[in-house]
Image (tube, rainbow, N blue to C red; front, side, top):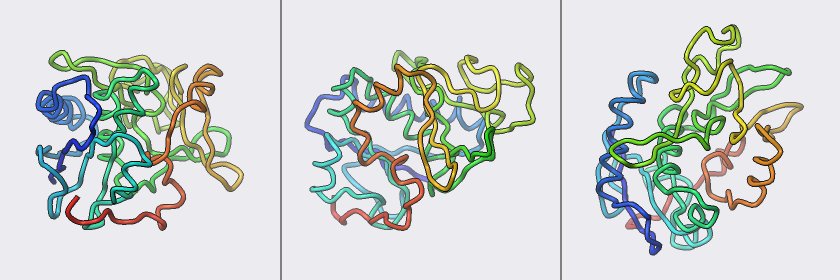
Length: 228
């Protein structure tokens, strides 16, 4: 499976794009695939490629939508968008956001998976949200921590398995102070935060256009316009 990676942002990324694409490939091959078994090849392109998934770097959600970058590729395949200006405006790294979006697209490309968790709730199969403010580096480029399959397995005892790459998580369904999770409870999707500080930061961020906002409404997702 191929993922077309292309940069349409006018805002500087803060990292060389070629080096970032190479680091993301190394992340998948050496860190993510051994855990999740989801191989993919990234290809630097100038836009969508026929038959390929996509990871698009754009300035902001409203600008992207106006330019015809919607919810899926023109072929109706998975599309993740990294909003460069929105990311930098809240003091986050573009490389970490890109890694986060890539990790989640690889495990739940249709945005429709969830696991039964504590409190009679279903936890979205998002692999980076619970640990999203934890980073590590690959070839000097910051990447996102990610949870392991054991994180979604409620029968695991605390400390009995590795729950995330950085080994910060100690038990299933644990949300770190800088993380959050989308949870389905009482007939609706909502967010659970690892701390009050994270909840405040979350409310200040522009989350429009992110894959997590489509959960529960994937039937409304639209293909992007061809030729983008």
